[in-house]
Length: 65
Image 1 (cartoon, helix red, strand yellow):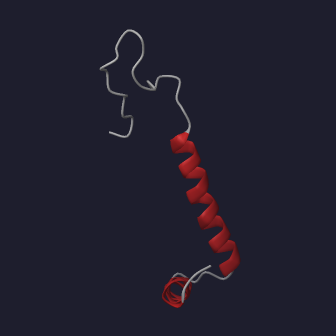
Image 2 (cartoon, rainbow, N blue to C red; image 1 turned 30 degrees about the horizontal axis):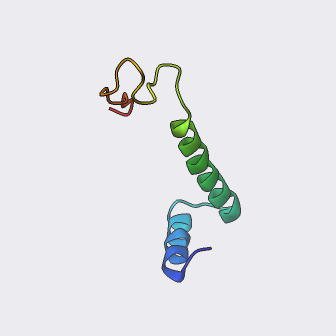
Image 3 (tube, rainbow, N blue to C red; image 1 turned 120 degrees about the vertical axis):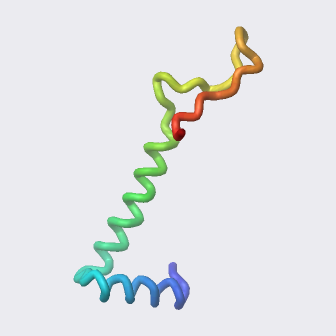
């Protein structure tokens, strides 16, 4: 899953910030990133999906700004 440099970085992080359970830390970190991505990708009630019949040149609303 991780190459040697990435694993070394994880080990340094865990030592520096006194992470006692590395598998729990990795699982929680990965799942937080996945859930955040899913939340950002979900459509919103007020988000425009793109051009429609009445405004074909209109750009989609960017809610990240």
